[in-house]
Amino acid sequence: MASVMQDDLQRISIRPMLEADLDGILEIEGRAYPYPWSRGVFKDCLRSGYSCWVADLDKSIRGYGVLSVAAGESHILNVCIDPDCQGGGFGRAMMHHLMERAEDFHAEAIYLEVRPSNKSAYQLYTSLGFNEVGHRKDYYPDPSGREDALIMAYSFI
Image (tube, helix red, strand yellow):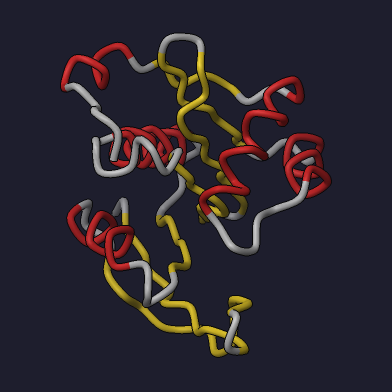
């Protein structure tokens, strides 16, 4: 982790994602994931009206999140923090923001999938009150084949 200062978290700005942000988002996505989302997937999320957000610090994108909401449920589709900023509280700030947006849409619950191998993300989600509610077999691509996903949920009611 790069030197993330506590005052950095107070200066972070979470704002709506714009198509103009995609170059910066894709650069982070490519460094953070072995199987990154494509530009087309992000553009589809924006066109579909999903709740898409970026975390800026000093006019530089440090992370982003994508949330869908329908029929009283919300689903976090993607949360990613620049690998140089991970462990500094940016993921927690983005998760709080996405959870607040889900509440704004009157969602009763919020769901997400996480790789069992992503221990830091799993610990973050449990610390926020998410519980494991199931799994999806062979959900994620993996160099050795496929990796299951843990399904986690947080209830607002």
